[in-house]
Length: 439
Image 1 (cartoon, rainbow, N blue to C red):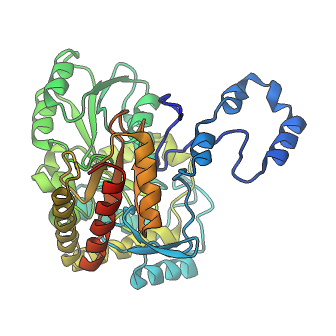
Image 2 (cartoon, one colour):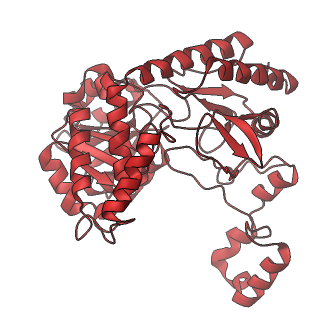
């Protein structure tokens, strides 16, 4: 029986990997004999810190069942089809919403940046690592999301860590949706402020918590725009109304909204026409924008403060030139080819209607993220394995990414999926769903 302890079953999503802990007796790169020899050599078996490592068995149990679904190795470009163990499978687990990760123009832009700037910056933005391409990209993104200024970070995870911990200090409060991404949670925990959570999309709960706080205290409300597991959208109009009433700042994580929602793919605030009421807009490059890194957009004074106070920025190496160039070209393509976003939503409707007609429970999804609820951990792992055997790659989502009893298969659509691919996936999903008793 697999342990149901909340710390033993983690899930990866596209914004930032959440590690699935590995058992000491079966290291990834070592057999049992090597592991035993290594322990004897280091004396780790006598160190209390490693008790949790030695006692961890959950991943080994899943492996023993032949259902381990993580760290699957892909040996091709991220596209609508990928190669795993020499076999082509349909990719329904990617965050490349606009299908740009293998676009020839983006690859050429990255190559040109390497030719001009080299492969890395050899330092942080704060010191020797600010390149002209970084400034150009910041200006481009500021225009996209309609904010005065933008600051780049090396990863999306670092944005939330660095921004929240720098802005929320002692005697301040941060209020956050319980379904927020792990990077927001960790940013809240890293700050010196008081961390207050409210139930998922519960605006009444948010209001009650705001009412209890001192009127003059600093307050930040931080939420995902599109929630990466459930696929639903924050009720931004009501959230902004409450924040304004209680003099709180608003930060929206648009990792899964850039390139998906809003005018020209500008995100959640644009989608609702509330850009002027959202003080901080965060986005990542590893999804619609076909690269790696992240950004925060705000007024010029806030960005200048973060430049000089955000430890995750100051003490991290700069975003590589190739990554920055790839984002720049991806934005150009997104703006010049609005039909990509239109096609993404056409594909989403086709898949969603097909899944609903088969009888699957998709919860409250409103976006190209479609959660197929299994409501059982083993069943979610079995469905992942069986679908891969049938030629379809999906992601299992289990505790703590979702509450126990809400386990699901996360399907995400791309603009470049064809009708034939979607119909193939629906056929296989129906077959496996019936086989496992989900339908």
